[in-house]
Amino acid sequence: MTGPSITGPRAGTDASGGSTGASRTAAGARFTAQQQVALAKLSTTDRHVRSHEQAHLAAAGPYAIGGASYTYTVGPDGKLYAVGGDVTLDTSPDPSDPEKTIEKARTIEAAANAPVDPSNQDRMVAAQAARMEQAAEQQVAAEQQSGAYGQQDAATTGQFIYQVL
Image 1 (tube, helix red, strand yellow):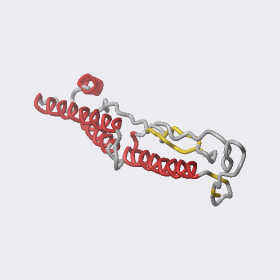
Image 2 (image 1 turned 180 degrees about the vertical axis):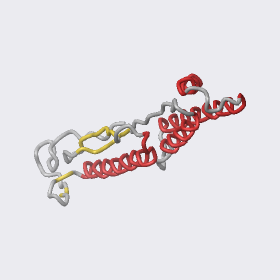
Image 3 (image 1 turned 120 degrees about the vertical axis):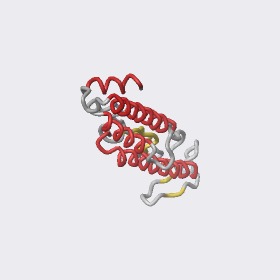
């Protein structure tokens, strides 16, 4: 998603260099009504994007890989405004134990659904986590049924879950 792009004559003048009656901001810069609307939209979008990504980070716990990364656009005031963002999560199964994979999948699903308005990508990550949880639950059930729970090596358990996904 890209933000509005303001191009054209310098703020406060028309194409001939005459005054457009632009108003001043608190910092004294002059912006046209169109630029003021664009700035308000960019500011709102920036707050929303940052809040959305922070919700993912807060819920992801140890499964967030780094912090949030943002896509920016430059507003008519020359400042950068976040217009998109993402948080990378470790969505791999825990190869040591299917029970740990179940816990991890639940955390990932909660992180993906943490914002008030999850995106389509967020919903896809949540669905992937639900599938990972289901595969791990099947693995636990199979191990319990065979009586070999806790005796299968971690690599085999992780491979099973990975193949189901």
